[in-house]
Image (cartoon, rainbow, N blue to C red; front, side, top):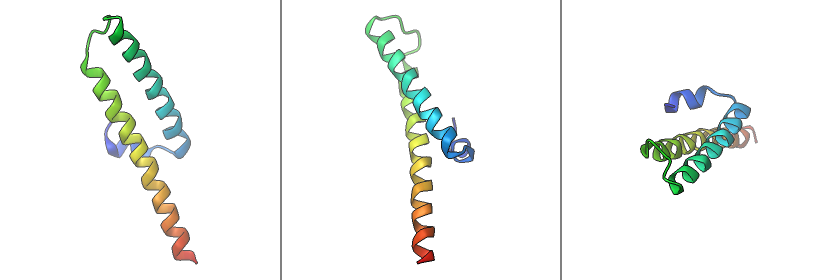
Length: 72
């Protein structure tokens, strides 16, 4: 997922997507241990997607805090 796509999602959708990606990462790690994983680069891709989602979420939090500070 590209950063722009992550920014277009709502807060609730980002939270759901992060949970889904963390579950996927867990499954990939389990496959890695049992040597059943086909594409080992998947682990890194999922980790980067999680980071993108969390970054978009944090950007929103900071923007909301800045708007609140301007209001006071």
